[in-house]
Image (cartoon, rainbow, N blue to C red; front, top):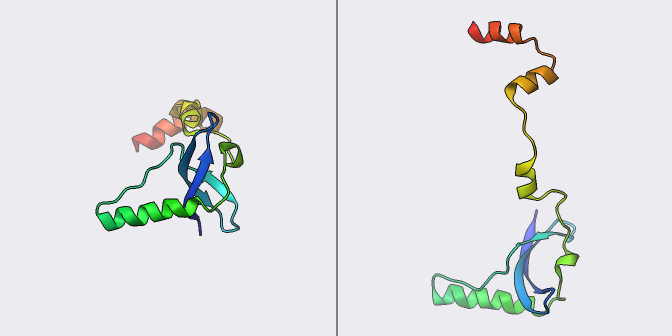
Length: 106
């Protein structure tokens, strides 16, 4: 089961921010939010609980983005990957276009 908590990060410019960090079952870091997060709540009690969670992050070691594994391929890069047309897929699978057309017509 994946878990998460808030962690303090030191940015490259020296500023400190809080991010959500996600962990594997063995406790290793899987990733973190790309952008810092802020405390929030729909009620004062929820806001108070959120601030308490942020305060808990202050007792943990400070991280940097270098401590977080980076994905092999970002979502933007994955979207830019070339896709194949149906004709290219059929050709790569060795499907006879005439036979495919016959099956589609029936």
